[in-house]
Length: 224
Image (cartoon, rainbow, N blue to C red; front, side, top):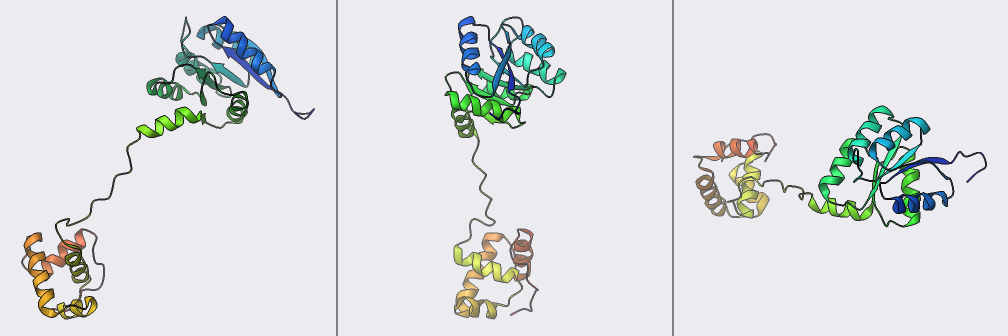
């Protein structure tokens, strides 16, 4: 740390004395971090944060006299410049989401490596949003895959779709035959199948329906 760089001021909130002291000792050993206060309850965390104005509050979730989620909600309302980093044993999705909605800027599981904790503290102090990799991977696993766009006229064969695309562009039957290197009779057979599947009477109705579904887009042509 540069001599001119102010250390990141941290408040540690955890109801277990051994865990709290262990976290305090760990943070105090990190370059560029200064532990300015400790709290054993959510209420103490809110009070001490208002008194000491830390840059980051390392917050446990399960604490008496106000849990970490509610303490986070109150802190972010009272002191929006103070970043809350949740460090807890709780990794269920509902808890993660509740903490994030309350305003936490970061979420790590207890047991994270020293370097990860330091990097995350620096990141949230700088205004970034950080979720530990183990939690992020599981949350991403719950996301639904991107919906596959619906294909218009799924009953059509690939060749019939090609014919319909050209018809929607306004091509004549003769032009369709030439473009696809098909016999005129073959194109007529494809059109008969297309009309039946689409429930239309002729090329004009087929072209209109196809354009409504995003096919075509060319300049309409003349009839066969």
